[in-house]
Length: 160
Ligand SMILES: Nc1nc2c([nH]c(=O)n2[C@@H]2O[C@H](COP(=O)(O)OP(=O)(O)OP(=O)(O)O)[C@@H](O)[C@H]2O)c(=O)[nH]1
Image (cartoon, rainbow, N blue to C red):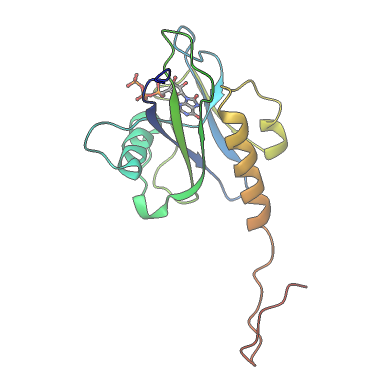
């Protein structure tokens, strides 16, 4: 039974600075999810790869240049319920990126700001961003674990 239109593919990028803060953008009021905080990004256009779309959107929205190879996949989220028209259903792919060229400018949203993990939990966001943010924070927490040293014997590395 067909009761769900083909979802629109959206890419989103969590830029993470040297202090582990994450850049979020507040959508303009009057648009879908207006006034809510989300990851910069947008729809993948026909003929584009997800990474190519992410690079383009970050340049358009923030004026930053980044390399597709620097994008690390974090998680994805998709609508479960049939959305009310005119809302469309989305699949959102979240990447993280720690290296870019330039200083972020707010070119598209209402505002941009850097947030710590615990602050993100308090922000009003579109529904699909809550599981994405959770996956991101989990990944960030794990990436802070010390890198295990490989013992000279070549045996399995151990964590302290
Ligand atoms: N960029 C982005 N969009 C998201 C996120 N979460 C989420 O639900 N969306 C929704 O995905 C939809 C498409 O994103 P968009 O409007 O930014 O796409 P776009 O830049 O291509 O816009 P356009 O259609 O005006 O060209 C919007 O309804 C947006 O609210 C997110 O974290 N980042």
